[in-house]
Image 1 (cartoon, helix red, strand yellow):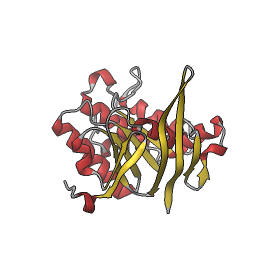
Image 2: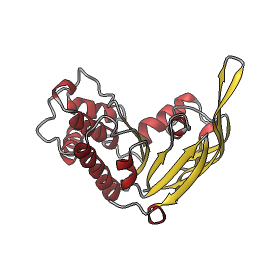
Image 3: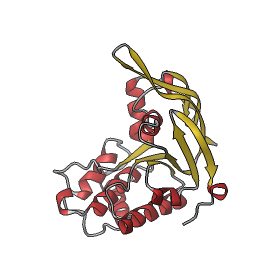
Length: 235
């Protein structure tokens, strides 16, 4: 079943009296459980596309279906609810709350959902921190963690609510090669075990090596869309 379906999606920004097309007609279908990388040069439109998919923005034209719902028909409050309940985000700058511990940063992602009692909530957070290799570090604040550990907290925060989709924008940009590989292995493991759909936006060849699907964007259009077998990518 398609989790995402984009048809003729465009996004035009106004700069004074000039219209700037960021996306110029995107057709893309992503099935549940895919592990996909969107890549392309700076200014190609990949981050704009991620913002639309993540319900952070709306297209100028075209249709964008998420889990069977047409997003253009949903107001800001409704989009916020979809983001909160169904989408996890991983950023290159981690975006952790500096005054909170690793545990509290992860807990924050699900506390507002009101799905779990106090014990269930704690068990879920601790299990997720352990799953990303941070057992015993739950009481450390971000300034007491390495870059790789911060990104592991960000992954745990994104996955703890069991979202249908995780969007990762340049998740390895600030990591060394060894840490990048470790972080990517965690996400591959979560993808296989939980069936979570991952979409990456990246310039990093290391991320592309892990992708089961490669989608290239140039000048606001998809210029390549290949499965891993076709692209000859392996890890």
